[in-house]
Image 1 (tube, rainbow, N blue to C red):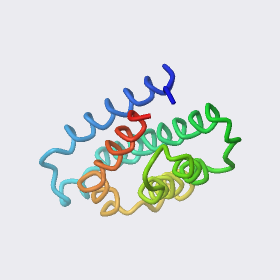
Image 2: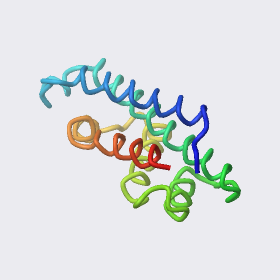
Image 3: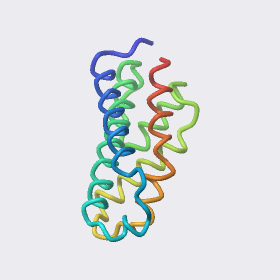
Length: 135
């Protein structure tokens, strides 16, 4: 399947956000992160947008393949895996769960969770982009 221009633009935006997030957090310690309201809010918002991009891409591919709409972001990711567009839904479903936490329980985001994601999990976004790019 050949992806369309909308998907390619979304993947380019994902790349841009990923690069910016990596640059902003280069050399930031957990202690610095805990003390910075700005860094915490930046991480929350940029991660939320990046996850929304992944969900949007999944929904567009599902529609292009005629696989029907998904009721939730997690279901969209699972359908994407069932269609063979990604190897495993697991890391991306975890992203969606985190996005739900940010959106629905925004007052309780643990800075250590945020820091762990920006310091250890950003490669999941690159992997998603690379898997979709192979379509």
